[in-house]
Image 1 (spheres, helix red, strand yellow):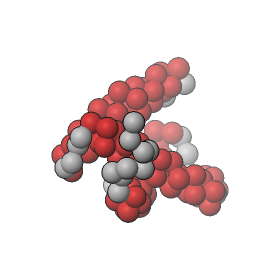
Image 2 (cartoon, helix red, strand yellow):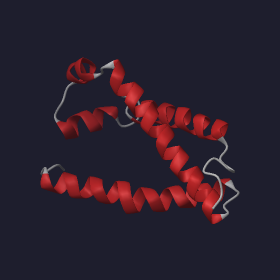
Image 3 (cartoon, rainbow, N blue to C red):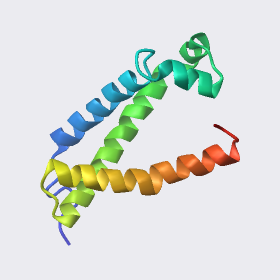
Length: 112
């Protein structure tokens, strides 16, 4: 069995984690979907600001790094070597695990 770190580009994983955070900041900004998101969850900008603890962002960054590492690890195992391979693996993982669990949780919480 190959060594666990063999083939993983840690710089690429780090850049991916930073990109994930930047995309998230843009996605939830008032310019893109922030206002609609706040209406959907029934919170005001002031409430969101009050809940925005620095540790939340630290944990989010660490988890985005872990997710990126997971995609990189699967790419190494499956012989993926292109951006398209990474996007396809991430898309399958996102739909099969993240989207599926979000939909299930939202249904039980009666969220729109």
